[in-house]
Length: 398
Ligand code: SF4
Image 1 (cartoon, protein in one colour):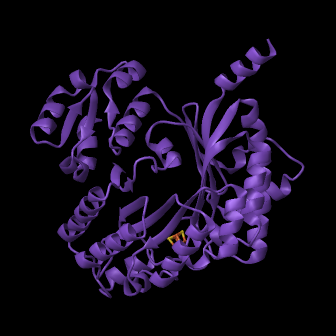
Image 2: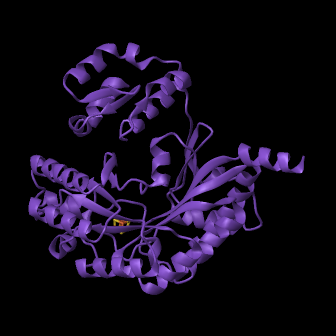
């Protein structure tokens, strides 16, 4: 009987992913408008203490709700700029206050110049099993041009160190469409990453965010962006070169060897639940979406003042929204179509009571005729050509 009760409890637990935001960077990159700051050690400590309090409060709530954590993603910012021992402390706190699966995927975002052997050993012993390294470009001139602090040599050293410490699940972030970047630069970097044995690559098109140094420099003609056709060609080259080596696109900007897809990020695209911890982090649980404040001081002060432990976090929560049926349908279309598996039409009908093939008959026929989408095994998927027109396809199907 006891065994049955335990088994029942085990099977009733729901999976959840945790995202933890560490908003610190050594220096702001020229293109970046993420919530990340260059802060003093005192401020970092203040934040980590506040974060610890949020972990305690949320941990209590979600353990009671019977959740088991199967992915943790420590992102930023640059989590690897924390003092030695901080990541170990963070992960051990997460384990203490949440039910973390022993096989959970645990990722940490890092920059090549902060990945020392000592840090990597700390991550390893804390249970981190996936690294996500921000390379952006394997070319020192381009790195300098976008305000990155590291060099390609430091990246090579970081990979060497990571392998020496025993990491083999490593993502490398790249940016395509950097001013002065040429197609041959992209070819060279992909060739190099393949040689290094890359298992996962994220390749994002450069986005010019307002009020960044990049925006300023473009407006003042310090440099200019490559032509759109060149950036598209760069993406095609990445897709082709990686595919040839068995590194497949599983989301519009993400490529992996089979089995190395990022389980945590897949949650965002496949309607799975996740809890965000820390400033600006987003959560999605039981059809409710919310975001923590992006105000660093407000976040830290809230937990400082509430050190005796209030349980109501509403003061630091913004943009709370309960998704109705239409919003859910829209989200499902927008996010699923980004992935190689697209939309499961049977599940879609079961979940939303909508026969998409019937409802969007004319649009689907037109998109299929132009070979932008295809229907395979009851799934509606984008083709290679369709991925390039993803936004237009989504607008037609929503
Ligand atoms: S390291 Fe990442 S988060 Fe930090 S400034 Fe650069 S792009 Fe932004």
